[in-house]
Structure formats: structure tokens, C-alpha cells
Length: 137
Image (cartoon, helix red, strand yellow):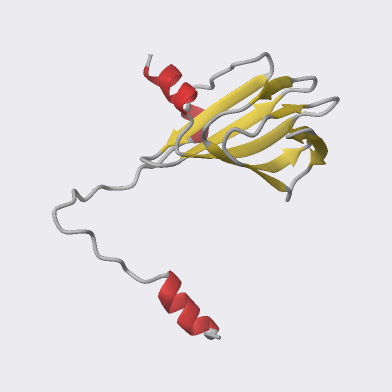
């Protein structure tokens, strides 16, 4: 098994850009400056979008309900502050800071807060189409 130095050299290697591809720069964001999108009352989303990934910074007010839904995009959700109840394919758990969940494509899921607020992050691969469409209209 490789030692830590070998792992670091591999993980942090500088990959060369494919010949003929366009070099791009990174993008910086101030999350407070991103206009929040609200699909349901009490649910505020601030998406950051790349070519193949979307990171959505989400805040829930107390008593917010996200209805059961499913989508093509794969999703990972994790909690930064507070807590919320999360249902994935009929199984329900309360997620708190330090907890995460993975939702495969087309698997039904829902969420809700009760007496507390919650701040969580959703990562979508590829970027969530319905949110992209809303941002461009």
C-alpha cells in the first residue's frame, strides 16, 4: 500500500490540459450576493454552477416542506447547521451537521423542517436542469 507521501503526490499531481482544449479560469462567488431562488415557501436556494456540477446552498425556515419528488440528476446532500427530516425512497431520517445522504438518479425523496431552521448543501451531477432553466429565464 502506498505511503502518505505517494498518495499526496498522486492526488495533487498536475494534470496537463488536453491539447486543443480551451484554458479556463476559476470563478469566485460571494454566496450572499447570489439571488435566492424560492420554489416553496421557506426554502431558499443559492446555486453555484460549473460545467458538470451544481452546488446548491440551501436554507430552510422552520416549518418548510419539500414535496416528494425525483429527478435524473444524482444528488448528495449534507447539513451545515440545524436539522431537517429527509426521506429517501420511503426511509426517513433526521439529518444534523456532519451527516450526509446520497440520492441516486430517479429515486423519490422529500424533506421538511419542524421547529428549527436548517442550512444544507446539495451537490448535483450533472447540474439540476430545472434550476438551470429557471436561472436562464
